[in-house]
Amino acid sequence: MEKTRNAELYQEANVYSPGGVHTSIRNVDPHLIFTKAEGAYMEDVEGNRFIDYQAAFGPFVLGHNYPFVNEQVKEAISRTDLFGVGTTDMEIELAKKVCEHVPASEQVLFCNSGSEATYHAIRLARAVTEKKKLIKFQGCYHGWHDYVARNMLSDWDKIGERDPGSAGMMDEAIDNTLICTFNDLADVEETLQKNKGEVAAIILEPIPHNIGCILPEDGFLQGLKTLCSEYGALLIFDEVVTGFRHSIGGFQEIAGVTPDLTTLGKAMANGYPMAAIAGKKEYMSRFNTQPGGDVWFAGTYNGHAVGTAASLATIEMMEKEPVHEHIFRLGEKMRSGITEIHDMLNIDAFVAGFGSVWTTYFMDFQPKKYSDLEYNNGDLYVRYRKKLLEKGIFKMPMNMKRNHISYSHTDKEIDLTLEAIEDVLRELI
Image (tube, rainbow, N blue to C red; front, side, top):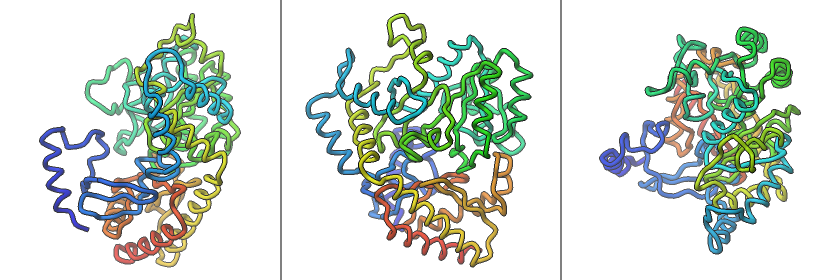
């Protein structure tokens, strides 16, 4: 893999931007300068071509530069763009589609990023309940704002402790967010009891994909809903990753548990900027987009033609073609194929995943909570991924990060990937 031109341009990027990147998590080694993407592949400035499983952390459920989505976007911006007043026909059509498919969505509002959506959901929950505190789970990620930017990828000695993710965060925001253990209802109930009458909401990734793929145990999500009802808190599912990728109705449709509020994004628009907050009408009506509403909701680019057109096209593909059937089948083929390789080579590893998502933890049991991941061999995890890069397989070269399969991937890419995985593991182990 040629890297010279990548290194030169990275040096130039550092001159004009701190760290040369525009999102912190993008600064990884090796640092590549990407110039092209199509279908299941992406290419850097050297012409190195990779089968892409990073998928920009999940948006590309159909594949890069998907022709049908791009054509719909081109058609939309040929006749419209942004008005900043009133409503567009596409906003109405998309809102109708989201409410039709997502169980929690009686009404929906559009914004531009998952962080915006979770910020709005938390503010709304506090307004509805007239309470301040929030429960989130160790290891889960819900965006960059002060309310949730704590106890994400904590050091092992910081698990469950006060672990703000950034300098400059307000103490009040940090300390009004309480940390619980995923898959532990007793811990959640104890926290609610200790803070009785103070918790506005429980927010969670129904599958914590920020740390790879840890599945909720039977009864956990329903148990959270029951506890929220008992203690007068709202249940917020952050489905920015799971929404539309795992089902057109989100993971809530699969789990059969309907939260009070839901946040959506990523796969919703197949790579174009788009996000949403959806929920029960009695709560959504509090937003001041409706006359008399007292919860502020604003954004110049909300409902932009690009994102709405891309979302409509992506959802139409899911309605008309076997998108989820295809990506689920390939996901299962990948997971079972890797497991067979581990067994053949006598490697202690667990292949976790759901649907089109997977990751390999180098540990000998299935993790159920964040602290279990201390047993994962993080050094091997990253070295394994860097070796795969040399063979043209792109997985984020960072510990505990998930991989994604798109509708553009085929059996050919899966077979090539499994072959590369076997070669790399034989070399490393």
